[in-house]
Length: 445
Length: 168
Image (cartoon, rainbow over all chains, first blue to last red; front, side, top):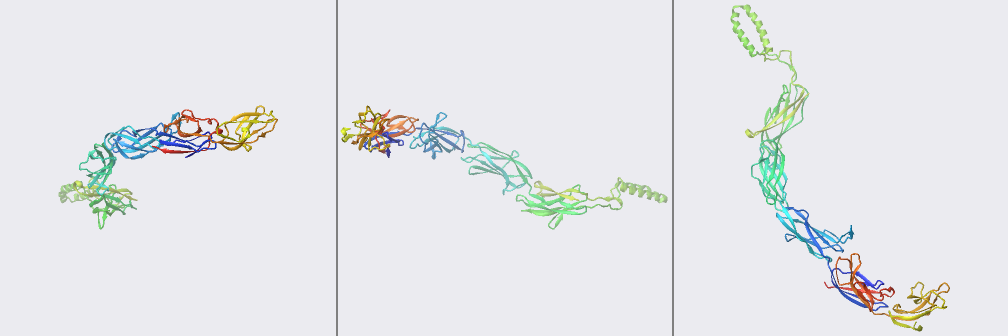
């Protein structure tokens, strides 16, 4: 290195980095001064450093990553530090040396405080056993700064909080849960980055433990549990689950959640049946669908609305028509037709008087009393005939009636209104018999 | 100077001379200059006239072979004039070089001019090379002591080669 004297007989340059040196300066001379040389030995020590470690959170949950921070401070006015931090857990090195993630050189006086060169290192450490653990860090040092090792810090590791990630019920194929058919209640419990949780998971139906054997699977950090279950009838059930906890995990609960259970068969009605006027009929389609893989026979029947006077209904499936039909339901099911008939207003019919019980008794008594008399007194017979006709006709229209209307009155037939006809499907028998119904709207205009 | 004959001296040695301005009523100062005089060219040294004359000595003649002359710049009555020139040869004197580790506090104020060790980051450290006369010395507290320290016009000039051998 060549230096130019500055006119005052000297030159200067930054000292070499910390180390031990032999320095020789050779003056080349000028017109007034002869050449000369000098040698000196010098040593510059690296700036001392102090490192302290701490955990970003304490205590730490089992199997969770914890950010362990190394704070390095100096009393140096020098440049920013370089180098690495090696972290230790329980005296054993963890991972590879970590480069400094934040550093600053001397930053002058800020609010009266000298901002010396400083640096930070960090490492996400995993703690895999319950209890107290020690952590420490060692700064490597660099050309200007000396190495340093922190004192140990204690990290307390506690049980990890177990948490359910899912709870569900489905049929064995993963689809809808069908009443009376085997289903599976499933739950997944998240673990940490440590061992997969062990322990027991209990399933509940409306807070009552569901009996049976739970099967477990351990997959990449979570515990899976499955339990076969049969829901007896369609409806909405509330299922929940409890985890017992183990040496590394706390217990956990999955709150109740609804499970909708459908019947083996569902019916989907077609459009509203619109009948333009009483006396006419109408129909609509009706899809019968197998739920959750059900396969079997369903009895389908229809019932008129109780308010729908003088109406009938029937079902047509293929070539068969009747108020009840048997349908083989499998896969996507089948389609049938609901037929409805109505009655227009009409004249009441005149049939022979249909004598009521009282009239019949009265008539028999009269015959028994007056028949012997008729044989002796013809004039009484004619009188009796007149009374008979009056009594018989009166009985037909009176309290003892039961016969048809008298010629000249009108039956209004099916009234104009909206009615709801009921279609019911039934599967199984005995204690396993299940029925569901749908109502079909029938509008008589 | 030397009766007008050539002068041979070693740099830093004093040489006697006399300068007379006529008429002797001339006032002001005269300067020794390297010949030929050039406008704006600085002189070697200036001396006040007493009754139009100066008789003294100087050790400030720079090294080399050249001629010097005296220049009177005039006053309010008399105009300026140049003297005869005298050849001189000034040989280099012996120099002394120093190289030291200088340390400072955080404000840059030197704490030692001749440290042998330091800690990085505690103030500033730099290498300083001083060149002085044969009798020069360096004090840890005050730095170099040399007869030229306060006479910049005669300070050593030129270059220094610095070589560092790492013994770490």
